[in-house]
Image (cartoon, rainbow, N blue to C red):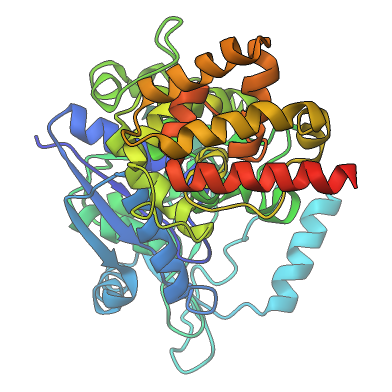
Length: 469
């Protein structure tokens, strides 16, 4: 048997961080077992689904690197197949028309709650011959006896009594199929062997298994993944927690996709005390039956730490690929300045996010209008004029602009002026960087370049003169 898993989001918004973890677990399971991973877009909610949301999901999957073997398939392109299955269920006496009004169903629900009963449809139309000419829905005729046993890969054995389940709607009044029908047909037609999804779908599973049985099919194996909670313990929602629930928001915030995947795989799963996992290690070590049954909470500090480890330890060329997006936001063209790889290697240990990294790389490529106020007031004083002027003169005469020569000039100025290194080097650093975090001074000056360095020293001397006047 070839393992086949799927990720089946609804295009009613962005790719949710919880959905991304479910997609990751499903993708890992398929890849680990030599199987196939399918992307399906469940867009039957015509009012809420949008092309923009579809694009957001596809963009998120691409950014995360969760490549799929088949798809994306769209449910709106399969309506004929759903109608065929609904007709088959009707012909076999396994579904029926229901003309119960909204008012009747609301009163039924209110009365059941008042009697402390579980709200459920009472089967009023189950054995009636409702005309196709009156407004109606179609309900699945759920078995009245027996039980549904789910051997869940995460939760273990879960048993539902059929008496707890009512006759769910499989076709709306307007003729469109409902989720519980379409998902069953799709999973059957697409030969899904393992379904990894959020545990908010657990109550749907026995209903779907009963529909599969009515179609003469065996159910796939299920794994219901616990939800992800916000740091405050609440359910993640855009209304409460903003766009931080969106995968692409993490890109905007400067996270690497590998760091986010690493973080997501550790939400509810562990392998000893190991925190950092490459994709290959995930594929080797991840086991879905080791996922915790309880919900996990977002820990933003841990995610930041992980992201920093990836920024520090990933190939600089890989960092460059993802950093270019953030440099573009700052209107920086990295070809107009020092080699971006050299700059990344010089600065990456000082940043937790790519947004921060882009920010502290900016002064290598763009001149600044003002110095950091605190740094300038402390370092750009009258006492700095002499060392800055001497170094400027020596830099101006330097033909071979390299790190060693720059190092020698700075140290030579310290000796010539008989000053402590800090009195020479610190004002120069503020002059050249504007007060931004930077690597060793000789490396910084070399990367900034001769002309920019001379211009910025002049700017610093002008600042000091203006201060004195």
